[in-house]
Image (cartoon, rainbow, N blue to C red; front, side, top):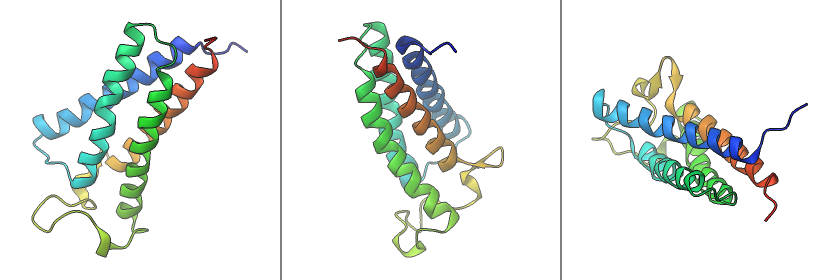
Length: 140
């Protein structure tokens, strides 16, 4: 079985981060859906991923995957918390969203019937796994 190369893994991680970043910008800026507090925190991890991984590819830095792992773990933790809140595992009384702002748990968190926190969690998990895989191939 052919193994995926480090550069290919890094390229796939960057594509996922870029598409996820553009998707949340589309949802917020084009569709006009204001992000909830936890979505903002997830963006704080996703946007740098697209930039850092892209620059790592540009400069052919095979070790940039370690930064991808760190950012993906942070964003994944926020997305996991958001998903727990969304499905009711995290009690509503510790919800970070204000009464006047967008809710972290209502139907506005669905895109094509899939919760945004679940999509974010999947994206962060894939980016983290691909970033780790990219490090296995480096010889430095």
